[in-house]
Image (cartoon, rainbow, N blue to C red; front, side, top):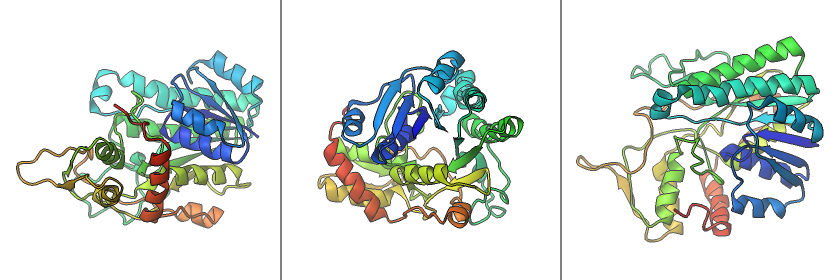
Length: 333
C-alpha cells in the first residue's frame, strides 16, 4: 500500500508516518518542511519504506505528478497552519490557503487520480468553546447532535474543510471522510513555524527538560489524547471497509490536566518543579483559553469500528518516557 500524507512533516503527520512504517507500508511525506533528523533515524529503522517530497499542497502540478508517480492509493490530509490570534490578524490568507484551499486541491486531484480513500484531519475546535454560559453545552460533543460554534479562523477553516470534503466527494464519487481530533499531545510535536498553539503538555515537557519551573494558570480539564494512539485510530479508520459516516471524533474522551502530566514529569526529571499560579504569578504555560470545551464523544468510532482509544495516562507517559530517552535532543533550543 502506498500512502501519501499531506503535511507529513508536521506533528500528526510524523506520528502517522511512523505508524504506517511500522505496518510495513510505503509512505510519501508530502511537505515543504524538513523531516527532523531524529524522525528520519527512527523511520529508517522501521519495516516500511518512505520518501519525502518537499512541495506545497497548493502546487497542483507537483501534487498530481506525485500521486501518479508514487502510485498513491490512500491520502491523509494533515497539512495545517494551527494559527493563533496574531497570525490570523496579520496573514489570514496564509491560514486559509493551507487549511482550506490545500484540502480542496488535494481532494480534487485525489478524485481524478482514482485514490481509494482520503481522510481529512479536521479538529475538535470546529465545535467552538463555551462563551461563559456552559448550561447549553452537552457533556460530550457529538458529530451530529452538537451545534458547531467555531470562532477562530483556524476553527472556521477546519469546519469548512469538512463541508468541502463532503461536497467534493458527492460531486466526484471520491471515498472521503473527515475526523475531528481532540486535544492532542505526544511524540514528534515541535514548533514548525506553522503551529502557534503548542500543546500544554508539550510546553511543560520542554520546560522540564530545560530545568525550568512550570507555573500553571489553572487546572484545566481536557480530553488530552496521545498522538501515537491517534495515528493508530486513523489507520484503523482508513482500513475500515464500509464506514457508516463521513465524520468521526477521534478522542480518548477521558479528561485531565497538564498538572497531572507534570506529576509524572517530576518522576522523570527529579529537579523539575511545578505549581498552580498564585495571585502575583505570571503563568509559564499558555492554555490559550480561559475555558475548556467538553470532551468529544467517542461513540461513532466505537460503535462503527469497535475501536476505543487508550486513556491511561501512566501508559501514555511510559511510552513518552521511552521516546524521550531515545530522542534526548529533539527539543534542544
